Length: 372
Image 1 (cartoon, helix red, strand yellow):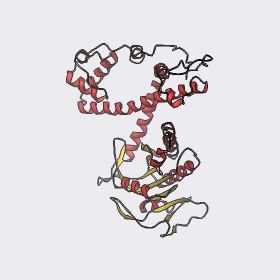
Image 2: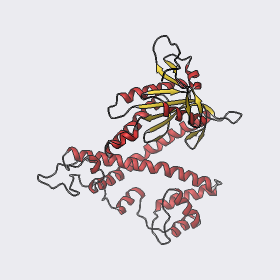
Image 3: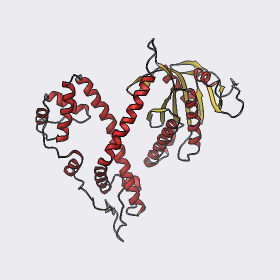
Image 4: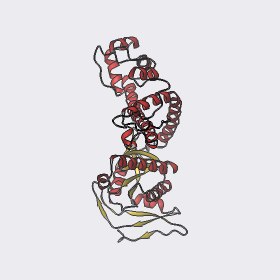
């Protein structure tokens, strides 16, 4: 990250002050310079020229560009670079070699949706890091969160991201290959049964308690910090036990495991970790065991719905599991389940959840139907 210089004595910090950032070492933060740094050359071609160069129709070029998540452009707009032309050529070669066009477009959409979020995430991380340095040096009396969206910090962020791109690119490819290997192995393990039913898995949801009330009393920066910390902590706990984070939606994290033991460890470790975090509210967790259907990185089915509904009725800092998972946990040491009263779950029906707790020594399964 760039080092910021202390401001001159008596300097007026408003508006958009000189934040003491070192002058860019490689390029200026203007669109042409950034395009040259990141894409090789600035945009100079229209859609007709780039489609002709790739040997495809304008219609096919337009579909590919749109699949990548970019807006459609006018006939005369010079929006394309040599890098765009080369990418379109590669896609055209795939299609000519026998790959269906719709498959190629689907792969483009998958890349676009994933890398769009990645690019935004990385850019914000760099901007916040620069803003924190400036705030520490006293270059501005605004909070670091506000500084991250100031023009000088954004310009410095653009420069630093362009400088980091070549260093990050090999890491991006390496992580993709690692994740691809894991995804292939999971898909082989998750192949449907002979009768077409989904493979049995444990699905879990971790939900922040009273999130709406918490949001009302936090600033935007505090809310962002809380959600980020929750996602990081949940991801660390889930992956440490060999589980997979399926998705995060603000106040909720959905995860998946193949076996009951790691699922139980994840849930209880997450509750313990959350109680030790003063920044985070209480959490409640629901888990269910049964067949799931995998599709485009997500999972679906009655098991998922049951786990979600159990989460909604679980107590604060508590874990509810369904009967199937309770049976899976019965022979395992280190955990016990406590049957609770019956509850009616929307879209599921009447169930009797069991509360999961950690035990040591001799393990006895307790049945306390009156327990809340």
